[in-house]
Length: 126
Image (cartoon, rainbow, N blue to C red; front, side, top):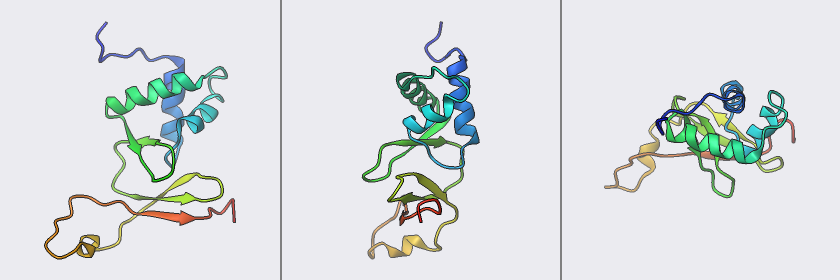
């Protein structure tokens, strides 16, 4: 069996479904919790192994937020930013981007990419 071909198991289908249905980036623990609704015995090691494989395949993208665990979201999503709730530590998508963010760089610097992270309380925690 080729290394690039991974068998589509019940667990992988559950993980894909959770990530497809999510409107925000998820930690592996959140994927496990939501995935257990589809496959009750879904283990954390299985989730970690599968999200890594799905990221390596380019289906998922890692979302790295300072001071937070790595999260995953669909790789095909358009450019966006994130909001992190200080109370529940969930991350949410922020759509849109401030105009001319590149103009904030010091003179003579060339911006290659940027990331904006907002922090505060989500509606559930306020």
